[in-house]
Structure formats: C-alpha cells, structure tokens
Image (cartoon, rainbow, N blue to C red):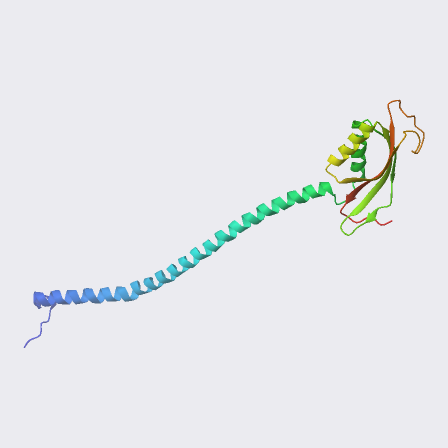
Length: 198
C-alpha cells in the first residue's frame, strides 16, 4: 500500500479531519498560553477589586467619622472661645477696668476709689479682687450691679456695705446733689492663667 505524498492527495475527509485537529491544537495552545494566564490575572484583579471595595467602604466610614470629629472640634473651639471670654487666659486688666467704668458711667454711678488687691491663686484659676468706693442713687447702684452681672466676663461682688455718699474714698471729690447712697464693695474677676510672679 502506497503512502500519500501530498496533502492534496489525501481524501477530503482526512483533510478536513487534519484541519479540525490543527484547529483544536491551535485553540488548545492559545488557551494554554493566553487564556489560562489571563484567567489567573483576571482572578487576581477580581480579588484586588474586592479588596479595594472593602477598603473604600472602611474609608467611607472613616471619612464620616472624620467629618463628625471635625464638626465636634469646631463646636469645642467655639465653646473654648466663649469660655475664654468668660474667664480669659490672662488678666486683661485694662479691658476689665474699661468695662467697669463704662457700666458705672451708663448707670450714672461715680467710682471714687478702685484699688487692686492681692491676687488669689486657686487650683484652676486666679481671683483678681478690687476694692471699690461708689456713690450715686440707690437705683443707679442697682443698675450698675445689674450691668456687671450681664457682662460676658464673670464678676462677683462681695463685702457690700451701703451708707451716706460722703467720704470713704481716696482723694477729694464733691458729692453731687442727686447722690443719695455711697457703697463700699469688693469686685472680683477671674482669669485661668497663673498669677504673675512678683
């Protein structure tokens, strides 16, 4: 039996079978060399996508918490600012004096004596007391103390004694005709810093 020398001499069914076999071998080679590595890459990428999605989910939670923390910090800064105006971190004596004298002027009360006293150091704040001699009308004094009570900075009044408007102050001054009451008291304000060393 003679062997066919040329492909064209083979029967048509054999040729078709060989073509099919070559196609299958080529498809297998392509699948082995290209599809299998691509599938591995695809699986690795899919895992990476899932990991990134989980990380994004955690990051969204962190971002929400960060926003909440930033809002809380802003609220606390506002509270600290308000607290700083109520009990400032330093003496701010000039501002305090301006406030007291402005309130006295608005109430038609005369401050005859304003003497600073020794500061008292407490655990978290320092007391800054002043001895005052005032005179004016009874209702003028009430208005003066009411104005002090409404100031943003904390001011306490102690050792209040009322009497006639004459005398009791330093220096010389003339009592006005409308002044009916004189008062001695201690005004104390506070600051959160330590008392300066002498």
